[in-house]
Each structure stands twice: as C-alpha cells, then as structure tokens.
Length: 538
Image (tube, rainbow, N blue to C red; front, side, top):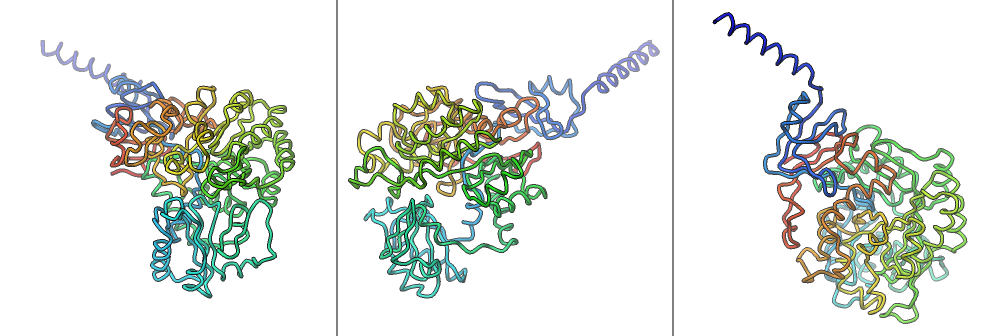
C-alpha cells in the first residue's frame, strides 16, 4: 500500500510539473473586482506580456493557462483603459507651472494681487501668466493696462486670457514687441489704450524661452501630475518645430513616458521641415497632424458666427486667415500622409471647415480630418459632416464652464445647437473627448462628469445644461479612450484592454458607471500603468 501511495504521489507530481511547463510565461497578472476592457465589456483579470495585454478572463482561467512573473490583486477595485485626452496643450501646461496662475480669479484686482505675489517670489525680466476670464468677474469687461504700467514700468508683463485667444500687455511689453499706433494685424485686433490683444495680435509679443533644463524640469513635473490624474495619452494640439523637438527628445530618451500625439502648428518653417521628412509614428510619440486656426474663441468674441453676437451687435467674430489659404492647404495635405485639424468654434467657422474638408475627401476617403472644438454647429451642417466623416473633437467641460454666459453671447436660437455631443453620435460620427488644458483643469474625471451629466463641480444645473446632449457611460468611456486613439490612427493598439493592445490602464476604488453627478468631486485615481509599468500607485 505504501508503495502504491508513493507511486501516486510521483505520478501527480509529474502531471503537475507537466501542467506548469505548459503554462505560457507572462510578465504580470492583474486582478480586480471588475476590469472595463472596453465600453460594454468587462473581465475579472488580465495578463500582460511585453507591455501589451495578452489575455483577459477570470482569475481562475488565467492562472490555469499562464505563469506570471508577478501578480497584482486590486481587491474591490475597478480598472479602466487609460484616459486619452484628445485635445490639450501639454507643453503649454508644463510651462504654465512656472508662471502666475490666474485661473478662477474673481476680479482684475485679484489678478494683480496674484501677479505681485508671484513676482516677489520669482524675480524675472519678463512676467508671464495665464487664466483670467472677464466673464467670471462682476464687470464682465476687459481690464486695462494702467495698473500694470504703474506696478511694472520697466518689466514687460503679458497675461493671457484662459483660452489663450486674448491677452493684456503693459506698455513695457508693447514696447518690447514694437507694437504702436501704426501696428496692424490680420485676423486680430489691438486695443492700444487698454493693452488688449485678441487672436493673431497675441502672437505679436514673442515670449522669452526657458533654458532647456528649466523646460525639462517643468515637463517632467507636468507628466507626473497628468499620470496621477489617470492620463496615459495626450494630443498636444499645435506646436512649432523647436518645441516638438523638446518633447520628442524626452520621449526617445525614455524620460517622457506618456504617449503623445503632437500636432504641427500652422507655421511655414515647421511645416517645411516636417513635410520634407514625413510623419513620425512611434509607440509613444506621433506626429501626423497639422493644426490650423480658422477663428478665435467665444469668450473673447473671436469665434466666427453666422449671426452677430447677441451681446455685441455688428460683431461676427474673426476669420484668422483667408479661405483660399485653407483650401490650398487642404488640397496639399490630401495628397500627402498628413491629417488636417482645424480649430473652429463658431457656427460660421464650423460650416467653412466642413466645406474645406470636402477638398480632402475627394482624394482620400479615410483622411480622418478633425474639427477641434466644433462648439457651435448649425443643424444644416450635420449631414455634411456625416457624409465627409468629419471627426468633431470636443471638450465637454467647455460647455459647463461657458454655460453661465453662453446664451447671452450667442442668443436664444444659436444656443440650441451649441455644445453638441450626443447629436454628433446620432450622426454616426466618432467623438473623441478632451479638456483643452490648461484652458480647463487637467483632471479627466471632470470631462467624464461633464459628458455624462452636463454639470459643473457643484452638480449645477439640476438636470444638466442642454441635457439632451449627455452621453451614456459607455459612450463617455469610449470617447475618453478608443475614440481618441481612432482620431490619431492608433485604434488597433490603444484605447482598449484586449489582446494586442498597449497595457495602459488606471485603477480606481469606485465604479464610474454607478456614480451620480455629485459623487465625482472627491474621486482619486489609485494607480496608473503605461505599457504594463506602474508609474503611479497610492
């Protein structure tokens, strides 16, 4: 009997060893209460190999088939594909960390106080800041430069409005740029008495550049904040060659872990350089898109409208370059491997952008050309957008930031077709979601809340602003993950947690699908992984 028992032990041991030997070696097994693989599909566990998802299923199934080097169990937690911000200004955000922050100021006086506090702690030959919004102030009027001239008679000061489409400059900054009574600029306006510059006029003052080490320090700090917020991919919506090179170098050195999709700004020297070399398509750094500005912003009354501003009769906004220029560029890009993205906010600008895209469609049916913002789109233009496969790249938090004054600016008719979301999906369009940070906060959960419930951080207004445009949970999740990947031609490797896709994911202790609008304020990402590497974990 003892011999038989011993033989059975040897046999069982042999079978067990053979079973173990048959298991596929992988790098990591991840287990959670629920893993959202994509909109409408979940699993309990996934295995990761070489930075990609290898398989998904139950913990028992995967343990029986795979041999992981490590296992991470997130008891009672939820995993989602990493958030992809489809329209932001990552480098601009990084540099803003070294400038005076004027976001959420309630008056011009508060702006001045923040500026003085910043200047005392950061002595500089040129003072820069961004974030003021006169629509948040009691007066609602643009400020003037008198106080800046008094405080800083010899130091140039340039303070940009939150959207970057307007700025205030003191006399020293105007002198620095050579701006005077004879200065004119196409696609922009100058109010010399107040020091207010709008749209193309803002670019007349060239900002001094950081030294390379300072830029690197700020970029890596910005990356840390973005990863903590759950961002794994970001589209930087428009940079010139010298700035693109900074990000590309950091990405190729391995210091920049985020996946970046960078758009080339409409700058002749930058375009000539990259057109001669062709698109860049690396796993963590892509450059395939050219960004154009057709109009300005609604907040500074630069958005190009079909009818004049309700609160400024006779003002239709600004078209920043002639129509023929955009048509010529569209024709040129359509014959190359470059994607065209047009900033268009007003209904007139969106109509014109759609017509321009018709040129590209003649030569390339899969051009995936994008309208950045698509903020006010007339109902008559939806069918044309559908026919041309236009991608409306929207930022849901713009709706919840502008809702307090948008109708006053647009009027009761146009507000009914502004800040669309669901109506784009109803047309069958792919709808990537972003923030436009640093215009808005970097937190992608704010985007999620605004897309799902159409409310601000205080869950206002009850029922939501233009609630008929709200997205479902699955639609919002898709918009913040896969749709952004589609818009950058990466939908087969990014945005889902399925076999062959990058293992980019976040961990949270709440089920976003079950949360109400007022439950988003205190949410916190518990861990973020890119390529299966945990870059942040509480």
